[in-house]
Image (tube, rainbow, N blue to C red; front, side):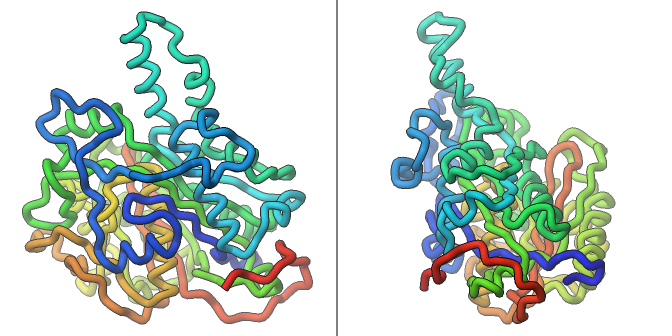
Length: 424
């Protein structure tokens, strides 16, 4: 139990669809290697743009993962979320049947929902002159599909399904929602994270703002030029520590707490004081001090304003003794609603395997940022507590705190979630 009498919450399954690797092993290998996923965009017509690189996923086969749905019934983001959910369940040593009659939360964050399908519908309407477009595509554009498709494909029956639309902080919001639901005893398990697919709308919006990098993303670098858009999904399977220990589950990390803030200071510009308040709130909720944090997975978009503002907020909380502060967006781009969920998976793997992922494409650190961003090469580290920052338009901020997998004995005799030994 936590000090306030609520249940301790742990992560026992990770599902990852990313441009540097699908599945835990490939994703971890990509993080360790500092793999870059940057390539020219093929998802949509890029005529008229002076440059159009992104971190696009290639070779993804939805038929490998879908059980109840046909690929054409789901948009690309929902396909990602379902695939990641199946991976998380299997990685936790569970079968879908083990969750079917349990009380489960499915919480998925997103920025764009299925805007890629809206791009497609618009193109069809222009091409054909049909104002109604394709009815099959139209049926799948609702963002609620990102969570409801998981419920359907796993055959869950006693479930709450939520899609969280808090833009680029949505993944952490979704995980925080799951943390509260498990710690308070409202559910027995939660599948939480984020998903988004590369789309023309978002790329064009950032391009018009002048924040798309011509070639690569260089967070905290003095020569940084902006973001690269990306895509993917990260889904975490969470349960109580008692449940995980009772069933002998492998534990990747403990969710220690989180903090939220919504300052509405500016439509797009981050606010340093609000970010700092969010970080401090996360520390209080987790019961830690700044000096306990071993590294920070920063929002780290690679824009001039974000990196300086975020570094300033970190310094406001931590003082002059800053922990290593890295950005995996240098490798996988900005995956929007999936960003902090994929970063949470990276943090859990870092805690489990004892390394800090690098910030690649780095030449020289901007003195205005002044952080150790672990340039270009991963480093081995004995990690106990990590912090995962997520910042979004409209001042939606969410900070998640994860801790090393605890060693504990169960405090209850609650039945296990599964009926077979975990995979080895």
